[in-house]
Image (cartoon, rainbow, N blue to C red; front, side, top):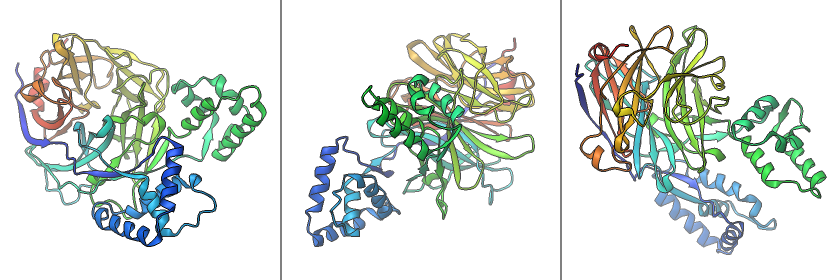
Length: 487
């Protein structure tokens, strides 16, 4: 049975005009000090003129221009000569010299995920406001997460709200207190040998503050300098204290969600954060939260991470750990199954697995769920976002990779009470590369999604085209469920 797939008139393309401010690190301490020294020799009237010009040229695009200059000046404070007498204007100019604009989506805008928005005020009856996350890629193939907001009407038509022209990265903060057992679990996930960490961790209590951590490093350095204290090992431990962090929504808040940017922060994210799979999660008491699983890339390997938002002004970001926290594409169920969190994963880069856990960020057990069965998924399979609950079971959108590394999108139906059991599949893909998705793009021959949504018995699937742009299709849910091949 062929299922009609209706393409929606949605096309999101990279916009090089959406820029953010980033710290400009020279990568060389001597060069940075040379820059600082040159700025210190500029006459004060010229300093004031330069800062006035920067304000004129860049403040219209960046609401927090001088605040960012001040933050970046603080980051280089240790390299400024101690006897330098800095006016506030010169300090801001120093910060400006270590600041750059970055076009965060100049290369690609793709791999979308869609969920109902927190705000539903003013939405007509039968409609729903949604939030769509997207992977934005800019210079150097660094990926970040951006958002769009829109409305699905009663017929499943899609309308995007205006996009904010001035995106702003959320500000980060790192924890000040740590639990030793949890920290050691993170070290294992980061492949940092515990024997390297022991000389420092053995000096710390079960719960320790960041200040105590640095004091332990200094003590180990003093006592073991002659025997070969390993600065690189200490640097790895310091980086590990930043893998779990908080993102802060501003006060006053953003006027639009499309202003929000989640930009790489920790050391494991330094080459990008990718493919956020959003899910609106409902607990046993009916309280709702938003979770998102995504991938951090440090240039060598990938690390699964978790985003959690329960309202208010703080978003938690944590490393996902455990024996089965491997590879890409973890997708959380929107509620507990038999009292446990549940996840779809692909820990071996080829097959799909079903996992359950008492903790949302620790995954130690997995059961093989699905292997490539049809020619269009002969290379590997994966999920296209969190499972969607229907009266017939859990609808899991999947992707399959076939000959010539073509990515296609299909669906699998899981038992509602036992999601480790498959009760239906699409023998043919619902969506295949065609037209420009086949012949051109950043990565040709790819259609891909990180999360769909059911609205008014319609399945709305936003999807990426050739890892470059984003579109969407609408599928009748009842027709899709009726078409599934049953075991």
